[in-house]
Amino acid sequence: MIMRHKSEANYLFPRRRRCGSHDSGRWAGVLQRGFGVVLGGAVLAGLAWCSLAAAQSNPSPPPPATAVAPADDSKAEGPIDCGNRKQLFLDERLFAKSQNITLRMNPPAKMGAVLFSDKPWESREIGCVSVVEDGGQYKMWYCDLAFVEGGWHCCYAVSKDGVVWEKPRLGLIEFKGSKDNNVVMAGILETTVFLDPVGPPEARFKAISQGADYTSPQKGGLYVHTSPDGIHWKMSDQHVFPVGADTSNQAFYDLRLKKYVAHIRVWAPMRKVGRIEMDDITKPWPVKQIEKPYYIWGEGKMPVASYEVPTMFGYDEHDPVDSDMYNPASVQYPWADRAYFLFPSPFRHSTGLLDIQMATSRDGVKWTRLSREPYVSLGTEDEFDSRSLYMAAGMVRREGKIFQYYGGYRVPHAEFVDPKPKDPIGQIFRLEQRLDGFVSADASFEGGEFTTPPLVFSGTHLVLNVNASATGACSVEILDEQGHPLPGYSLGDCGEVSGNHLEKTVSWKGKTDLSSLHGRAVRLRFAMRSCKMFAFQFP
Image (cartoon, rainbow, N blue to C red; front, side, top):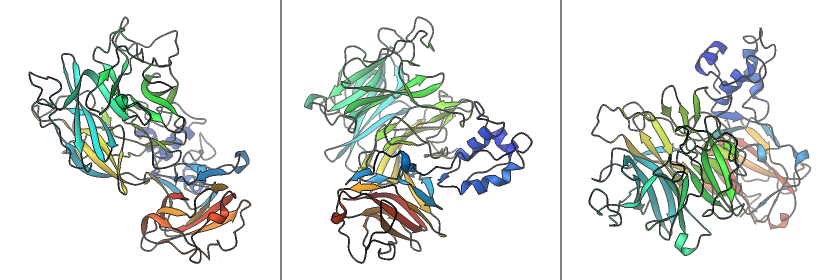
């Protein structure tokens, strides 16, 4: 937990507005920046010492902004249906009771740069990255961010392992007098690509981009591109979104909702993320008419989106007053049940700096930031990623690792004054995250435990993604719906788990088969010591 003296907190973290009494909003903001979120009431003790400093204006301690209350069983419509799908610990949903357990965001490892501006047709700045896995091959699209006549161009790279990337010379689009390049789209601005699981063969890949004439009321807005292979693209004749959205806007097909979802920039009144659902992404998107459009490029130009679509995510009272949220970098996580992620770049206007945070959701609509600490931190002053970071759209899996990518730049946002004017100012970097490792339920060496709400499942055994360390341990007890241990499945019967496992099958006196419990509402009680629990599943 990060705690500071009141005067220091006020100086370092000015707020947009206060929540309740004089100090509560400020302390809430400081605590919200704590790296972990404590489950249960343990955080109250940590707050007690600050009550004296706040006594004159706030006679009671501020509310614990980082405490996550256990799920309220009384409001549940029934047991959580886990089926055979993996369950991640993203929020309080899987906690009915807990003691000495902390939900913790786990930053990935930086693995270094994988793509550079090293070709004659590339400028000093590349970015606006998308990545997918397609038939065992990894594919990447990135924009050359030098604005030439007719707009930017989008380039293509491929990899067998997600580490070493090649830029194939495709011979498709002429640039500076030559087609000897990897350019696949031209005359666009920020562009993101996704693989459509329900698209017809000729439109398996789709892209969202701004038109190059982005301030024109007729030619601005967002366009959809379609492709059979991610290389040969066809752009829609008309914009599908008739309002400006000046960033890396994204879309994907939501497999749970069976609808397309777009995440776009809205100004409300500063940068936030809006959300649109639609059945056909190639047809005009639903937009609400508003009385006063929002102009940032001047009257008579294309207005930018503000309140025409619902706001999904943005800055709040805990963020610095001079900050807002840049590109969303949204993902529906395909390897677990009801798991959505955002990796936005908070933009600090007074410094021009951006790093990357993380938010999570169960439905893609309501979002939680467990921590305001960076998910990806700025590099040191001598490194390329020292000023501005933007997460790529998409992520790929390679065995037990998740690869993510980001654009890192040694200049602040919108500032291109550089001491080395002929050298590149940005590169594309790779991150490595443990499979399902974004958030964990943690217990210290002193030990902790938690119990889930009632669950039903359809698999035959219980598998954990867990790091119980060398000196730690984890045991699981199966309870009935009222919380009583089932015979043969107590903590004493459970084979203790230690070590680090992506898929560890739990046993009770050597027995692993749970098919006799199909359809029965049960609870799981996890007892842990020096342990990080990432996920469980009944395959």
